[in-house]
Image (cartoon, rainbow, N blue to C red; front, side, top):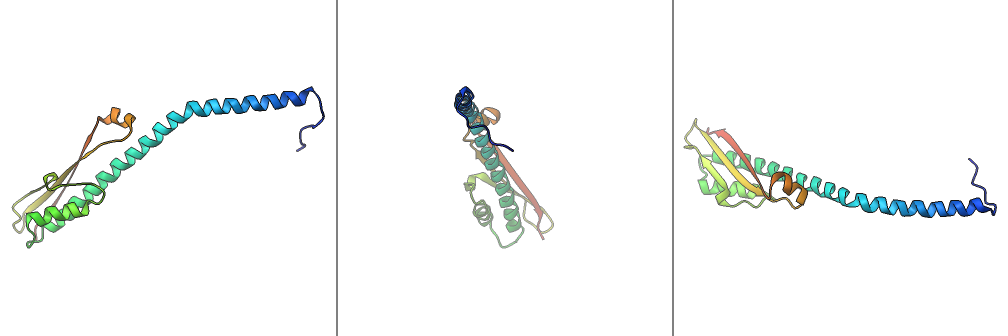
Length: 142
């Protein structure tokens, strides 16, 4: 590949001017695409946060159901097990419910709800200002 000619002629000035125009065009294109790209990026981050919260919630209620099938655990201990397992999702005792008699051979269901609040306005317009995430797990008492 041969380099462009370096002679002094009118063509050189024309090439230099075209390069400046192309750089200016690139800046304008970047300025137009940047807000769209950032909204998309933060939307994906919000979606990832919601999936993370749902996964943590599911794992926490499964751990709570495991704790509930142990006969020596009280309901308060089961609720605390769910709250402790929900790392990164701020749960309170009011968000966790336990249903079932906890007698051998019966089923115990542990449920939890969490209100996820998206940060990005585009996600807020799709799902609303908040999204209620729920998870439940049922296990049989031994």
